[in-house]
Image (tube, rainbow, N blue to C red; front, side):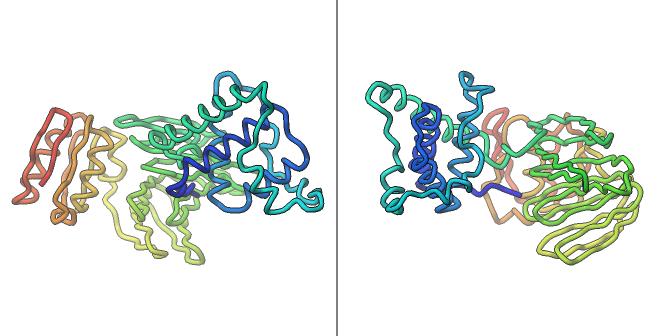
Length: 336
């Protein structure tokens, strides 16, 4: 599950959402206002996204932390209370709510601060990751014990959301890569999901990695079931699978090469150069930039230590004859 980016006019929508929140916080909110807010928020998915983003920022402001925001829940109960004559005109009037004269300056500052923070966070911390319960940064790995006793190792530059309930254990890999050691529970299987599909496990050990539109699964022990829409496919220990475009491709794997990042290695097994650069960037300080797209599909293989990835970058020149490696600084390397 992802959050789509706001359209190009997102500063305007964010300012409108922040104005609604500020008016709610100032306590000058009538039943008509509640109806108009519900109508504005539900008029367009972009409005609702702006509302969610502004609400998350507002709740994070230090001075408001721990205080509930009136109207944070859906306002369906207010829709049947619309006064006669309140319609599109009422929505248009209330897009930019106005406080009374005494609080106008404070209101304006609150709206501006909320909108500025929302835009700044959107640039440096994508809305998709606001859903994450666990995050890792560059070259960082994290070990997590879930509520059911399952263990997860989250690889570098990754994000994971936990969605447990009484019927199932669901985790969503929002970005990057994770290794799962699943606690057995036949009544409540664990589902590891990405946009491409999901892996169903009862008590197994497997790795999942998102690579663009493709999801890769490596099964170390036990059995799992991979689901893509109505399509199901079982995976046995030692097998790997690629999920993309509504299809599942199962292949024999090499157990010694599975999820080797847990032991401090980067395994590149015939991956396109563009993907190899992306994976190197997840661990190496700074940035490697591929400028010449003509090389993007050249295949790269190799096993490299995560604490010596300069050697991996240097090795790209040998793997792709004609590729030029230009170190501009210690942290910025250009491939052309």
